[in-house]
Length: 258
Image (cartoon, rainbow, N blue to C red; front, side):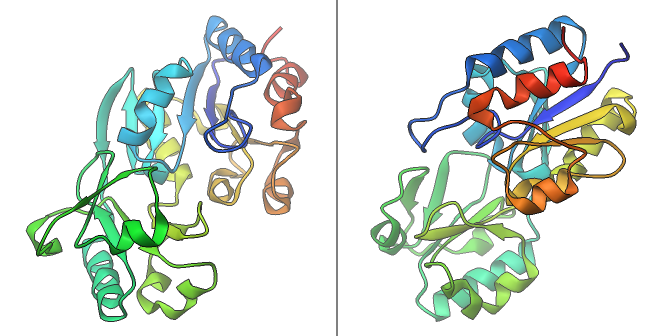
């Protein structure tokens, strides 16, 4: 069989269960092993930062990753680079949040740490997903790049923040949102171009809103049975739920594995 390039979302696709209690179904692990044994390329495609996802990538047995919502590429465990967010738009967002007393934090580098001007962000969110480090007299102008911005607000409150309208963002927690890149397809194309592959040989698996942009007509898009309706509508094929051997069943259905 001609070599395929497989890209997998993590949450709800590879990993199932509640946050902090997630696991990878044995059937998914078996499918990944068989895909590699048959010479296919396997890769994670995630909105998480490379620093936040790297250990997880290795635990899953992957060596390749499209991270940072499409802006970061890791091949054979080596980071090729990460494109930062639009600096001026992020600066405008932080300025607006400051003027409206909306707590915020941001990541000026590829790390597991967010910087904040005071304790208000942590007090509002109690978030431990990333370490919040308070820097007195924090000034974003002292940092040349911005990779992520976090804004503490509940669902619906983001509508009052004008600067958000020109930035990509998503919400994984009710207490705050992430401003982060949202074009996994761009990262997938960059990865396949780097490897000298053909877009027609790409296969993507996803389930959530941040997977919509990687469901493209030029390649095969597999929606998990637990995917949102918008993802299913764009899919080439809908498989079973992630916890019901969805990845393994799709790979068998298309004879990518025996």
